[in-house]
Length: 375
Image (cartoon, rainbow, N blue to C red; front, side):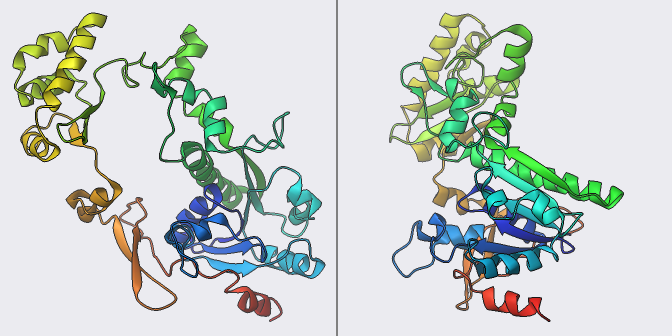
């Protein structure tokens, strides 16, 4: 689908690499530029010395890897030659860094006038925060998301998934770049895209944002239907595992009450009174503590009540649902053989993703790519 696109990737860690992986999965040629002296931290995650990181192997599958010192004049000249053959640049430095290197948008636009140039930063290219450092939890904090994601007792909670990095940086970048490709196809014009992970996180306040801006309602911990202000949530079982209960609609509430063998609670479940909501929530918890995780799995296999077990990643990867959906794939390695990785979740009847190889060694394609520039 995207085999006509060539991307030069200057990103590290998670936001940019996840975005360019999505492009590579559907055929785009991605050349990833790394420092020869300062390796990406993902190369050392969940691995022993000398081994390949499973995280790096996943985020960088099907990408070519070159190692260049961007402060070296000869390397910069090589980069600019590569740029002349590319459609898209994606970078993740703090604002001003690429300009100082001579690789800013205006610099590279002079080489490739229709270039699409995407910059991913924590706080954007403008404003007083533009050069501040930050991480995922900082962006979620400033965007307001952390102010109602947690409990009244303990406050904000950490998410196991980097929401601002992925939903903010990666996905919004992919959307913006594809919009830019459509625009260029229609007009012949390139553009510079400014993705702020904090801006994108603010925009994810799909319920809380409109409630405040239009009605002045400030969402708090455990104050809303979906953040702990109702029975919607997670419940511990007898053996210390958990189940998710999302039985919001009346038919599902009714099935929930039947499944926990307390059909008389249905009337209480329909009440808007705070004391009834609290009592219903406590009743659900007490019910779940009477059976083990496996026992409740058996019970709810008989009821479509929007109740599901909280699985470990290992349990999720081996769950029949994801086998049926083809969400675990075999990806070839440079050493021969293959490893299992998460598949692209995008399904279409026109194209299928292709997984050429896992992430490779630092600078593995440097000589090959530079030699081809002079041919």
